[in-house]
Amino acid sequence: MSTLDDLKHLPTPAPVGFNPGIEWDGHTGHLTMATKGETPNPEKINQVLDSSPFLDSQSVEVDWSSRPKVSIQHDDAGQLRQVWYKLTLRPKSDRTVNVQELIDRIYDDVDPVSLDGDVWRTIQVGDTHIGKSG
Image (cartoon, rainbow, N blue to C red):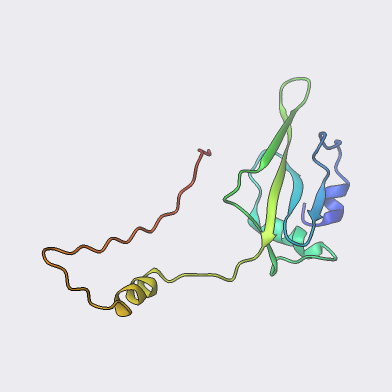
C-alpha cells in the first residue's frame, strides 16, 4: 500500500472507526492503514502522504511518540488477516538539537556566582516515554 487509492480499495472492509485514508484538520490528524501483520513502514507512510492532494511528507509526519490505535482481524481459522493502524499525524517539526551545542550554551552564558562552599550545577536531559511496546 503506497497511495491513498490503495488504502481505499482493500479486499476486506475496515473495522468500525478505522476509515482508510487521511483525516487532517490543519493542525492534527490521523492516517489509517492496514498491513498484513507488520508494523507500519515509515517509507510507505511517506508515500501515502505524498500521494495526498493536500499533504506531503515534507510538511507532515507521524507522531511516533503517541500510541497508535490498533485493530487486529483474524479469519475463521484464527489466522491473522489484517492489522489496522490509526497513526496520529502532526506538522513536521524542523527542531533538531545538537546536545553538545546545548551544553556549551548553558556554560557559556552563565554569570559567575560567588557562593561559599561547593557549588553544583545539575542538568537534566530526558526523553520520557510512558508505556511499553513490543
